[in-house]
Length: 383
Image (cartoon, rainbow, N blue to C red; front, top):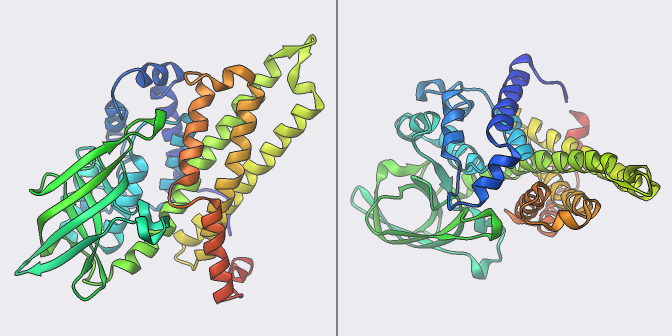
């Protein structure tokens, strides 16, 4: 495993850092939180103009055709600025399945306008980690050259703003297939869901006899489970990238604050108890980073990564909880001010920790993998 990045990857990370730093300042985010906007459309268009929305999209669809590592580096920078744009849902949940399993026609229809910032995508997979009884269900039956979809899905990330949603549905033979559902189709209804102070970043979806053409079937009929399993791995690692950015920046801001805030005539950062807590935060950040980088690298190299992904997401959930609570605690009273910058990092960290499965869920899935095959994980050592 090579931990160094190429010159192109470093340049992409630096460009993303500059854009997010310039466009998503603390002052801007405070003003933004006081209006009714859900996303920063100006920032979205800037990323499109600079080619970052199309960084991993195939060249024949107007992108740069780079890879998953480049996507994660951009997401890390977004996490550092907690910038309100639907990058994860569009570039990971929506674009990656189309890149891996979509036809050339599907890629040109959806990925080309995405790279230009004209549309947004997502996938209705938020319930993958939910207990079976509370999952939404969608059925699909064939009607000539069309498919008729009925059912509902809940908690779809950025579903209210998406122009197309990838929807898993159970066909008449009991298998799962995925469909590209345009949200302006007849029979679709959506209702935005408010997830606390982060705003309406989620929505439900109801499909009432929604007709989609056979050309909107993603992959082969009955291939849905295979696609979902692969997408879940990439989505978990992408969330680790966001969580790395959020946690690292929260730690750095807290370290700076403890060097400035004085008590008894000295900076509070000189107190041993506080210094040790910050040291623990640093160790946690590096643990999140190293486990996520391993999973990211294995996915980018097309190597088996199921156990590495679960371990990385577990670390991202567990460690971010400690880091973000330390950040708020050491900021004392102002850390609980909902308009103080550090509180935004707290909200993002908590939301990411429960999206697609909490730490306990990840540990459960990792245990199942190890129980089925106790040799899992040794490939990482050999690599």
